[in-house]
Length: 161
Image 1 (cartoon, rainbow, N blue to C red):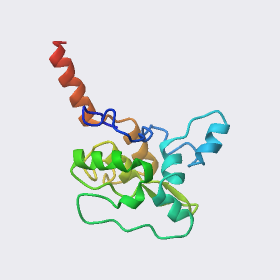
Image 2 (cartoon, rainbow, N blue to C red):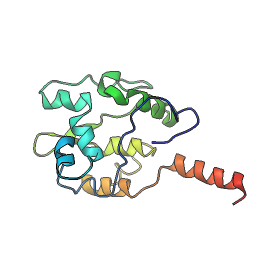
Image 3 (cartoon, rainbow, N blue to C red):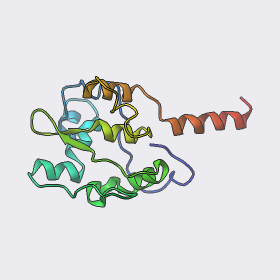
Image 4 (spheres, rainbow, N blue to C red):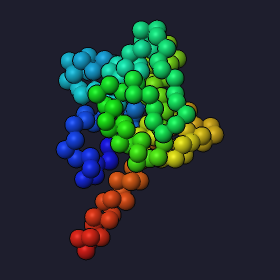
């Protein structure tokens, strides 16, 4: 997540960082199972099991639909809402739904949401013809958040580096 002087110190739990193996690590598992195996949960694990949006899908309920406006539905995010709202402000657009129903009928992280988390324009990776979801997630996980790179370069220039 991009941290600025406005976001550092505010109470919000950060989401996991997208990684290149996001689409190829065997699918989401409950974060407690992942920890029991000696590993930390992935973004897919948290998106698929912790977010209220995905809990509704798992329970067979329809989550609140997307809104045509500057913000996604607050009911989707739980404790992550403050961070989601800040990033919506930075990106200038509402967060897309965090998960989608996968081939096995369970929620899995949405490549469009990961693209949004990375601060990229809508469709920058997800609208490229011929890419599978796994390839999209690998590309996104290997990417750089442009806003963070820009802030880092600006800080280096301020230091005279």
